[in-house]
Image 1: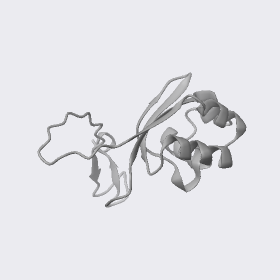
Image 2: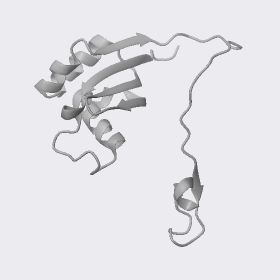
Image 3: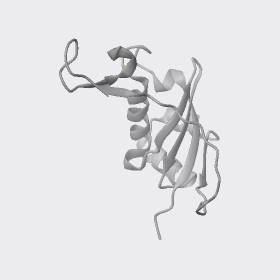
Length: 133
């Protein structure tokens, strides 16, 4: 039997997630990864969908722990302000087993990349397809 997997949803104040950083200084995804790792340690949820506004950051991701265990980790590793922000804003549900042949609907965010063959990029570099045009 495989390890349990939980779908996690959380909302955090954007001002705390992006504290000490200009919004355009670094990749927001990397900053969010760093904040989640700081909050939850090695058991941090792996985000697959984020919605970032001026006021809040909503995250959907997968974790190997339920909401109670994640809050315990946050209380151990996180800053007081972020832990307080998580209270009532962290939810998780176990992922169901999906039978073979079950029809599902989903949404996908595609970011195509191409391998370049020269200038202005390094030969063999993988870059966003839009930039390579």
